Each structure stands twice: as C-alpha cells, then as structure tokens.
Image (cartoon, rainbow, N blue to C red; front, side, top):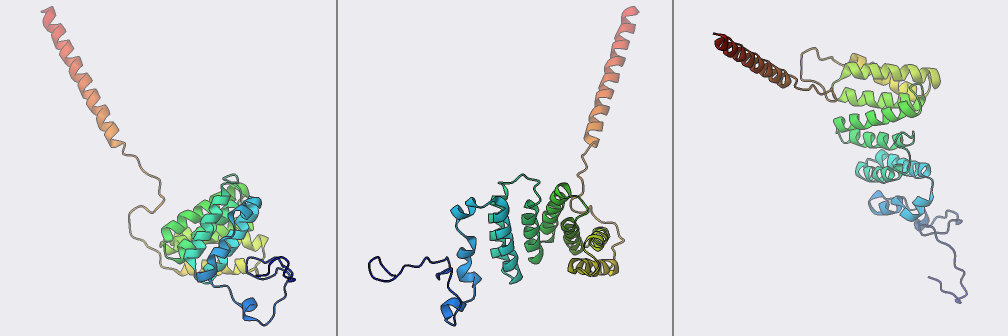
Length: 245
C-alpha cells in the first residue's frame, strides 16, 4: 500500500478492491467472477451506508441481489438477503407496496426448497399488501395471483389454483398484452392447472381454512343450567304445596 510522501498517488478503492474509475483489463483480478461462497459478505453491504439510503432503495437493492442468488440456486444466501430487506421494510408503513417485494421473494425461496405451505402463506401476504396498496387490477397484483396459484397447485389445490391463474391471465392480457412474458407464463400455468387431475374424494379441511369453534360445550352448559332451574322450580313448588296443606 502506498504511503504519504512516497511519491505514489493514493487512489480511492471500491469495495471490490479496485478503483471505481478503472477500466476492465485482461488481468485476473479485474475479470474475477463473483463467488457467492466467498464474496457473500460483500453483497450484504455496510449497514451504516444502507441506513443513509431511503428504505425503498434498500429494499430494491436486497431484493434484486436475492433474486440473483436464487437464480444460481443459492437459496440460503438469498433468504439471508431477504431477511436483511425485511429489517429495512420496518422503516415503511406495513401496507406499503414495496414491502410486498420482500414477502414475494421469501415465498419464491420457500417454493424452490419445497416448503409449499410456507410459500403459500408468504405469497398470500404479498398479495394482500398489493391488493390494498395498488388495487386488484395491476400487473404486480396479477403476478402475485400467479405466484399464489403455483403454490396452491403444488398443494394439490387445483381448483383454487385455476381460479387465481385465470384471474392473473385476464389482468395481464388487458394491461401487459398477450405477448408479454408474464402473460405467456401465466397462460402456460393455466393450461397445466386445467389438465391436472382433480381430487373428488372427501378429505380433511385444507390449510388456511377458518377455525370452527366448539360451540357444543356452551350448548351443553346451557342445557345443564336449564335442568337445574327446572329442578329448583319444581322443588319450590312442591314445598309451597306442602305448606298449604
């Protein structure tokens, strides 16, 4: 490292160890590819610098990095980035549309590792935020419908998956066009869901069904009270009749 007074100029170094204004050359140090195993701490960034950014920018930074790590099948590292994004999302209102990006990313990671129930819950949360913040007829909300449908299909809930996929396809056709990549993806998913075998047998209630409270205990308690009242009333009437005699 150059020191002051040595006659060598000190150039500011970027986080990757080279000058931010230096151009790419043929040296291995410049053309070295990002390695998630060894360079991941660099992707996390400096917390103090990130806090100076608007929360929307920090969320976008982490969600995009998480998407890249997920694309190279580094789902664990992607989840760590999304948890960092979740910390910055607390700087925003709970129903801010940008917060849905984090839950959508976590749902994607859960789906990739085969945790379909968790993925469904996470995508349902992203869908709820986007519906409240953006409305139902938007491209982002339609994307949430498609993502949720994929999770429901993985849980063998084909009828519900078909309903959400049909809704996503119609919205995307209207707003993005029939040739848009998202529209084409949702259309392919709709074909798969429609041709998938449907379960016609009775089974246990599905996940996320509303809990049914046990009201029979309350009814039994009321019946016991009525019986006690009727017994006490009959005993009083018998005593009064004896007194008259």
